[in-house]
Length: 138
Ligand code: GDP
Image (tube, rainbow, N blue to C red; front, side, top):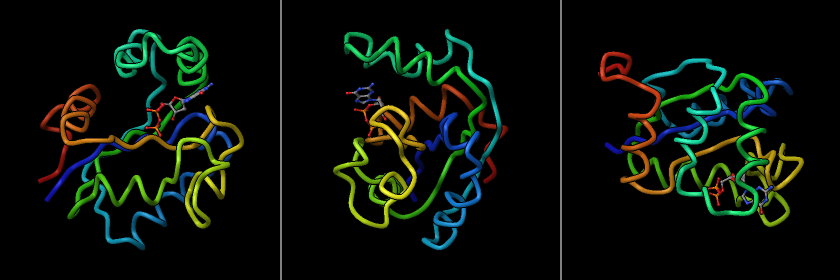
């Protein structure tokens, strides 16, 4: 069983899309094994997106991610990293497949509603960034 980190970003929370995202997880037999609402500090967001530090959109991305609360979740399932990324759709919603979360709800390449880890290595780092072992159900 694989694990991945999901974030419903500030746009998803403020636009009340949490239920829609969770519905799609449940419909696709993806288990939620940890969940919490947090309002990230700048330090937390910069650490999370450290791999993007040199990208031109970094400052804007950090401002967006700390603009309001987010829902962070640990998801578990077979091939869940790839399956959740497929449910999310392409980074730029304009290129996302029909029926994906980003195609249906994103409004901007940055304000794209959800985050999902892109590899096992990222998932381990990202889950550890937000959750202790005690917060994850067995
Ligand atoms: P993801 O794995 O699909 O989330 O995409 P990336 O890891 O490449 O980028 C991380 C996040 O940065 C994306 O989900 C967007 O919120 C944001 N982002 C990516 N590309 C751009 C861009 O060209 N401009 C802006 N403003 N934000 C971007």
